Image (cartoon, rainbow, N blue to C red; front, side):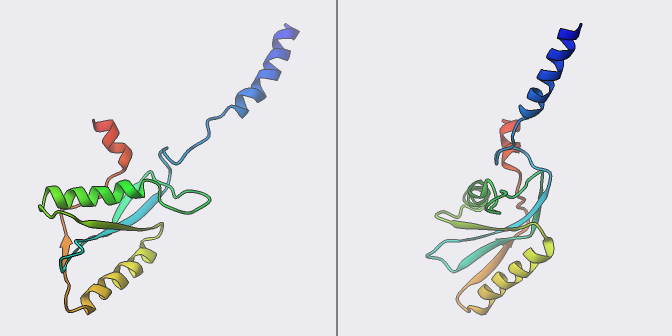
Length: 139
């Protein structure tokens, strides 16, 4: 009986240390707000999305970058190319953990395009960003 108790006392700390470390490809606990801007470099039309909230996503700890940021811009690009038949789009995604911070950035970028008389802004009302891991679950 003593051997079993001693064995359990030795194994318990090892099990605690063997806890799974999270990676950038795991689901997070936080919320991230983001919006996208897309433009064909030879055209004067700029497409901009509304600010979207994505749950279960945390920024990377050391760099504070958005994981899956290339997948988010690819979602916007594929939406424009598939739904609106706009080819050769260059998409960019802006993000923040605070809606207030992102709203400032949103209006600053929108004002930049509104001040330019050569560009026209089109807002994408039907577009929603989704968590990239959701597409793996649905397929």
